[in-house]
Image (cartoon, rainbow, N blue to C red):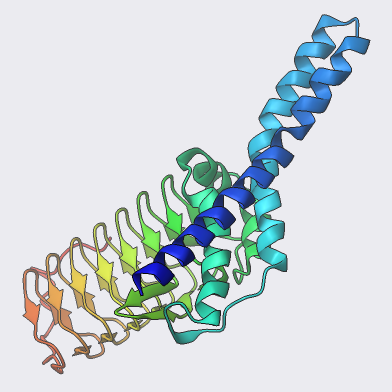
Length: 282
């Protein structure tokens, strides 16, 4: 088993560095051609301008080349598969392509902060409706082919959304669906299989586990931890520093007070909203 693992690891590393070398070589090719062509130019201004353009273009070439490679690469079906299975390696090779961008803070921020580049790359990568989303610096969007965006989605600085998780010896791949006007604060982690309804607001430092369903007009305050399989109905308000246990259910318009713990699989008893001590809306 160990020998097989190291053989697979070696093959993965070879694939990873071969692909990266190829993409980076394509990116610097305009610079190489420009340097070769400069001997025929007498204008110093043109020499400097061509060199500057070839250098500035390199990161955009890397992003677009990666997007095209992802576009033609087979997509692993949603669901659960065993580690080292055929579908697992389909996902892994595609994920190594995404890492060309996400492993570089500069490339990742260049992608997410320039709207035309962002829209085109995420469309090539397989995201749904990537046109009207606002992404702050240092946001990590893993498995963008699993992301479905509504209108005017906002994702705050240092947040991460992932379309996959590895549990034990299985890889789980599921879509993450964000409704219209969803606001996700800084430092949040959204796992695979999560659905968030329209006009929901999530404060900073919130963690949402796998396969959670969060309804419309929900407000979740800072540093709350939501375990796997939780259901939060429309209009609910979750206070700060709460812990919502696995497969718990929060009914419509409920108010979970700050620092409260909801036990796993519990159907939470709705508390009446007291406007005098309700947290301010985000």
